[in-house]
Length: 74
Image (cartoon, rainbow, N blue to C red; front, side):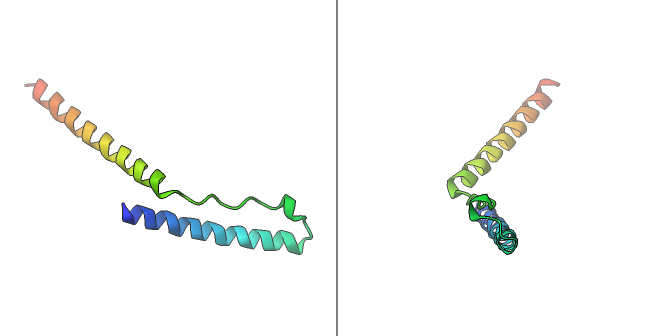
């Protein structure tokens, strides 16, 4: 889970850098700040943890259903 969280943080950091570059370019073009792009949303650790748990539960249910179908065929 920590690896997924660190990946999400790194992805967000990269997105923020790109956003800042875009905003700087808009500022150079004299575009009002109210018309600048919105900042990227920071991921929540709870959301990432929940998504990983859902994936893990789905994998377990897939494994249990495939093993039960194999035993039914005999």
